[in-house]
Length: 269
Ligand SMILES: [Zn+2]
Image (cartoon, rainbow, N blue to C red):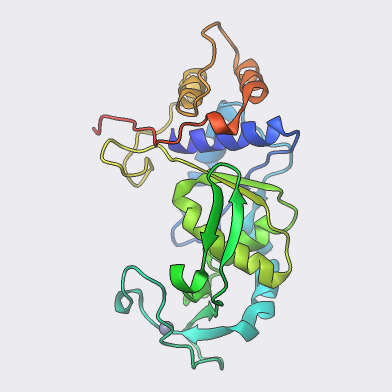
């Protein structure tokens, strides 16, 4: 329900502006990918009428672009062997490995960030200010296990013609590093909107990891009605089919009507 609600919000938001909506599968992390997850996601979207205007993209097919971006950024990077355990769990990376600018194997690649304050306009949250050196410090663009980092893959894919990104506020902290990479790579930067995510009564995000119940595709119409309710757009009670309900939602969409407070779904089972 959490993923459906965010997907539905992005669908309504871009469609209401006359844009095209599409699905990108972020499958760059094979060790963490769960078997069947992609099929389940696509079947869920289809059952709820959320079909893309463009073919499905897969990040795993963009490897050459990620490697090219890596080569472009390498002069600003160094080779880090700090284990996650050796670093404090919060606060910016302290720069332990900054001297290792020459290649050394078995390392992650970290980009050196500057001390500039930057701002951007979040279409939902308003002006966001950040300083990368204080927020996250030098961050990883290429992982020690040889995989592109989430930040670099997302920055490259979002920085090539994507006009709008709407996602959960759980990803708000990823936006400054991604914007920074787009800037360094000379890519475009989308407009961002970060919406509250659905939570369990204890405040944790609704997700597969938190054992949220799987969405029942047989109840697609009711699921969509419920999701629109969470988004502050409760539809009229007269009977709709899925296409008409989505049409109603796009026609009535107003980003500012999405409630500021998180919606809590529960009780925890
Ligand atoms: Zn290090």
